[in-house]
Amino acid sequence: MAESDPKSSPKASLPQDLTADRVRLLTELAAPYRSLRRFVYLAVGFSATVGAFVFFFRALAGRDLETTLPSLALQLGILAGALGLNRLENRSQQKLVRQMRQRLSSQKESPSPPKGDPLYQRRDS
Image (cartoon, rainbow, N blue to C red; front, side):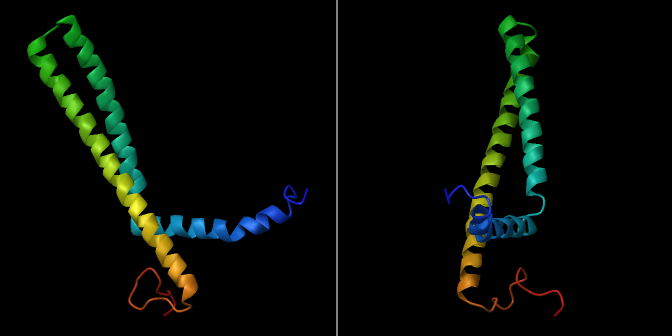
């Protein structure tokens, strides 16, 4: 019954939530336009998927093949590029999250922040 007590559960998860929020904020500080880039990759990928769908069925119908097939190939290339860039973005995001978690864990162990690191400099100094 103590596990389902709503008063004790938020206090127990508070440090974990603060660490996750700090990691999220620090990664966004290090790469501020990552979410915008991922949105652009998603939009371009969706557009290329629709274009490839249309050109595939135009080619299947045999209509104007001398322009339809190159257009289909272009749409598939754009789709592959958007997927590749999104994958690279995901990998760099995961690497950055690991680095930030490592910094936060080392910061908890050592009370003084590393000198010369712009993420840990105080604004009033």
